[in-house]
Length: 139
Image (cartoon, rainbow, N blue to C red; front, side, top):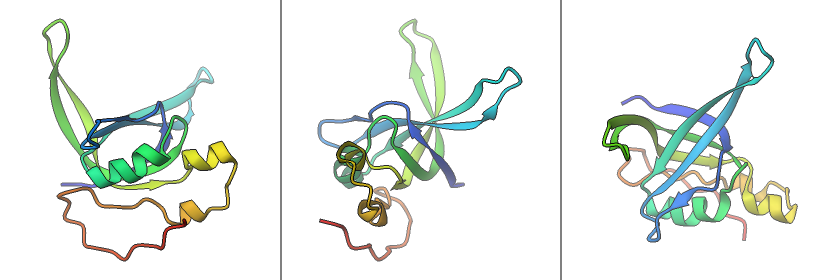
């Protein structure tokens, strides 16, 4: 399975299950301008199945407009529309997430980088990533 890296800003606040088992968010990235002078935007739907990541990082640190780097693999998801038509969509299953612009830091104006240094990089549940030493987290 190929890993993809995507950097962008959240289009909206993440949707998180009550038990933190699943989190869904959309990242938007600006990729230049078109011939009409309008921004060319590329978006990707991301899904995280890591309960710890969803509870400790996504729920607490991400909000609309926050910038993040997501590493993961694309999967095809089948669903049915209200009309009964079968459709498929691509989702990026989060393996690693690094938050570049924390929601809490933006609200309080604290941009000292302490939280960013402890970047929320945790492998998702079931990933084959090797264990890594964790950076000390700021209190």
